Image 1: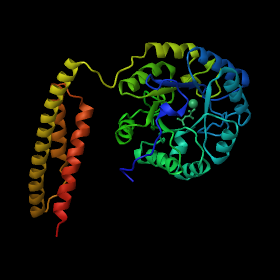
Image 2: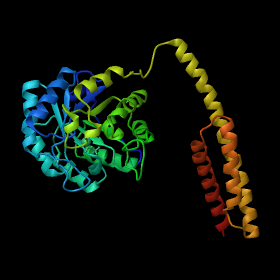
Image 3: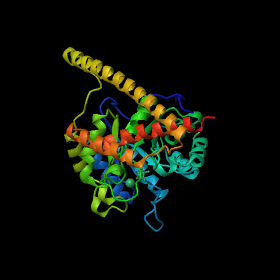
Length: 365
Ligand code: PEP
Ligand code: MN
């Protein structure tokens, strides 16, 4: 359903954040572990200016026999935070039972975890259970980098009548070693923002990083891209956390991260800036046109080659030639200060498009 629009209510009207033009920050432990841990963490976060607490009550763990959350009793601890600290509280729901329990306890906002977003059956059941309920829901990206699956989850909620919907970018699973626990693949949240410019877009630097020392740089990147806020895992004593210990930060550490963040503006009235940007963009537009023309010409020649290959019954793929092209591109590109990995991606896409066109030519009756 590419091209669908969502019927959304802007986050200013959710009654959760006093100022949505500053980055909104949701913080709290990965999991609620005890009444004392929740309360002490929330108290310190409140002092740090955090308005919305996060805590997982039911934890989706990759392997059985890990800590799977305290369950319903944790909701009472969250109620105490609402009552005594005046904070709003949020938790993850992954099935209908969670939805009923969380709503009964008066949780202020729900979020959908990455494993649940990836499952249309679960998303439909949750959406049906939420029909007619006016509660904000944040939808994490699915574990796999599939933007349509992410949008599908948003659409299911929206079709059930929910309008206070936002998204959380928490990165994507990879096999093998990588710097971050979940690779950011920023192009996916960028695509969501392109399709739904009004949606509240929050970054979860904790689950992207996997390690507290990377949170600052990921959070800054989110600010540089114009994200509306952050959801950060914070625990009064991260070393003894029962889940995601390495990525949780103390409330003091969180204050330090937020203090160092540079917040960018979406726009400015500065005329000199506007003129310079307009001028540079005009140059980019001309270059983009040239690129398109060059690409079109390249494809035309590639079509000619396809015809000759057909006449002479020659394979489309010529590994030696392709290898030469890649080597040359990488050598010239390097000398011009271009990133080799980037060039490889671009030329692989061009080469594949050429092959696709030649395949059509070759099989034309
Ligand atoms: C969480 O927020 O603690 C969580 C389980 O996150 P995710 O769904 O992003 O893995
Ligand atoms: Mn977690």
